[in-house]
Image (cartoon, rainbow over all chains, first blue to last red; front, side):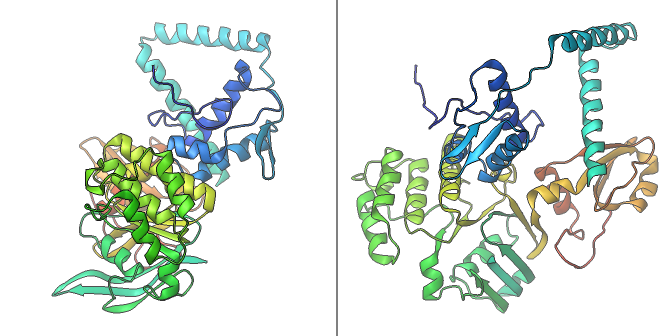
Length: 142
Length: 300
């Protein structure tokens, strides 16, 4: 097995061009996931911007934007001349809330099936609804 | 602060105008993609910026008002021409020696480090390198001169996907490190989408679109709805390009203020490739900073 080491840092980012999620948001989510899963903890350094852009062949602003968003969320903080470090763990959604949301979703999925929707139609409906939500948010924001 | 400025620039070859009335200000500190179909005038514009071609009309300046080709400009600009030409019979080491003796700002340690990172043997003849290595040597030589502006003409057109990725990765690492301005041309938009943050679309010798990539993508949307209502919707929006099948129509619109979505129509975000293709299909539409020309065109 050939093992490539991706520069500095505890985690390696990857980008999915087909996901439709903007690259900077993919980086934000991957940091958040790494926090949830314990790959990153407070005090850890995030991968250096130069290493990330060399590995992913993306514009440095994309990484800077992601790190700024993480700072804005209070999850990371920049230390001048050193890099960006994890500041806080992630408040995990309480299990009780997750269960409640899940119950509602299962009920809705039952209704969808009863109405004759197959899996693909359900996925299409969900992604279209989410798209509409984010588009309308952005439209009113602009 | 501008990297390249063109004022009413025209270039005629025989009876053909490669560029005509081309006005443009490319900001510095950005990674600028210059895109357009073959024959749009991209190479002509880049050659003017490095002083290899002189405009027939108008004026091109670089790095805040400097004349292209002047000693100051030559010291501060690096150019990687189409197909990254190097001397095939020289070894990599001799190539470095040649460029070192022709440059005022040569950083030997930097060049050596770059080539070592890429495992490129210094003793090998340039003609024996793989396509990817060849392009990387050209990039390393250009970057070791610590340019304020790096201009690349179709740098990855002939490279395989892995070599493309590595080339762009090395280029982006240099941008992160040194904050240089980059102007690169391509006729493939998709490969530039992740890399550039400023876009210039050149079409038929003129600038059709120029602007920050996020601003451009953020200010355009795709509307889809019943084909029968396309005229009414088109009248209400700033339409770039409309496309209609028998029942369903989709329209790329430019939105500069909040607009209500027409009932029965769906609004979706667009991406850089779709945006560029739409503009290229609608030659009379343009998206430029400042008041300029005709803003609307409908082509069904």
